[in-house]
Amino acid sequence: MLYVSTRGGGEPRHFSDILLEGLAPDGGLFLPQRYPRADLPGWRAAWRDGGYPELAAAVLSEFIDDIPADDLTRLCHDTYTEQTYRDPRIAPLNPLGEQMYLLGLSNGPTLAFKDMAMQLLGALFEYELGRRNSHLNILGATSGDTGSAAEYAMRGRTGVQVFMLSPHGRMSAFQQAQMFSLDDPNIHNIAIRGVFDDCQDLVKGISADLRFKRAHHIGTVNSINWARVVAQVVYYVAGWVQATETDDQQVTFAVPTGNFGNILAGHIAKQMGLPVKRLILATNENNVLDEFFRTGTYRPRPAKETHATSSPSMDISRASNFERFVADLLGRDADALRKLFDEVRTHGSFAVDADQLARCREEFGFVSGSSTHADRLATIKRIDAEHGRVIDPHTADAVHVADQHAGDEPVIVLETALPVKFAETIREAIGRDPEMPEDYRGLEDLPRHVDVLDNDLEALRDYITSRV
Ligand SMILES: *Cc1c(COP(=O)(O)O)cnc(C)c1O
Figure 1: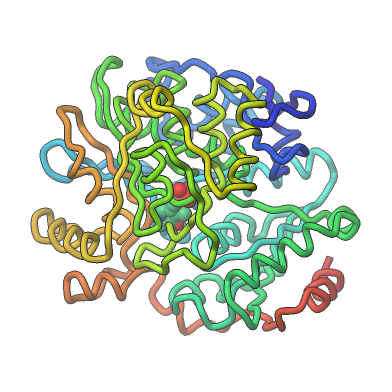
Figure 2 (figure 1 turned 30 degrees about the horizontal axis):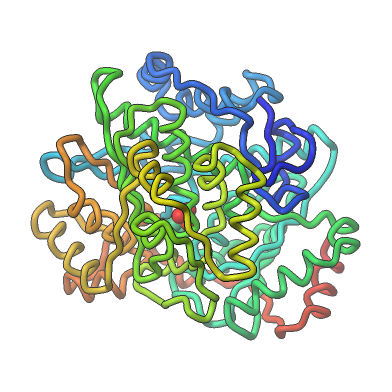
């Protein structure tokens, strides 16, 4: 199994060689040369005999041929434990009415689906850095979910330090408590006097300084990391296994989408041969991807046009993983792909032709829709009233859009966060507070570990240099 860049440059590489990388050297994204074939009976047996960790090892071994099978199995068992995920099934499927299910992906330490992949990434990083006798300093910017998922995945791990920038005073009280209560010596919370974009610019500033980057082993864990994508394929299989009894039964997935990371894994599962009828893509008011699947035009918006919504983890106007899907749509024609993304750079958008748009629907199974704040409130309220279950605003996005695309087959909605992370919106929807998990009570009273820095590249450089 070898990996190549969507833009066609460079030599094919093995999994472990791209594990610690972000973009490919030619600016593209890594993809396997070919998707492996689904092993439906084998996967069903793995789930039956060993639950989520066995299934993860079975699926991942199709993509990873340079980590010994025993080691990979051990890493999966160490990662997907009942202690870490608060549920023995890890990703439990629960009915939500007749033909709809919720796949619970938010039972991990930060109560959002990013844990599902990030926890495995932590284990893989520690393993690979150990094999190479090397170390890595992860630098990132966060407005909430990604940063906390990265910190909880990397805390206490050998060979890894995390430097996470966040806008000073702008995260929710819960998000701040979650990150700043960590006192592991390898985790550094840095609150920047500025907004999220300032944090991102600082990360870009450091990344552009190749000499500094190399000298201090700086890396990232953003959503284009291939290992994160492939770890997410596992829960699509887990959802299908739990919803079906025979290998020819099809399901549809409804997925709340920002960076096209989560739903990309569903696309890959379908390409492998998992019986997925449709992929329902749901956005909020930031509807760049919905627009593409309705009209064939991809027009990312500048950061200043991004709406701040009540499903904030999807407030993204440039879907960083979308290029991987476009590569498949174009039959891996790297020249054609480069042309399209050059058009985005020069003209702000590209359009695919009517045939290609039809293939998005027919061959790849995509349908899409978006929701407004009012839609999410109404959906949260209805699901609570009808099913006695409180869902978070991102999951509500997906339920809302799934309702509009109901078919004959079961629809599995991916639950991407627990409602407690977005208490204000929940109160607005149902007039009461969401439930706080037992082990999070008192979190906001713990001592805080955070350093406040000015929005100044030199100051950040000094901060990092004195700690690596
Ligand atoms: C990150 C996130 C999403 C969107 O996932 P993408 O991979 O960016 O498409 C949806 N819901 C929640 C709660 C998230 O944290």
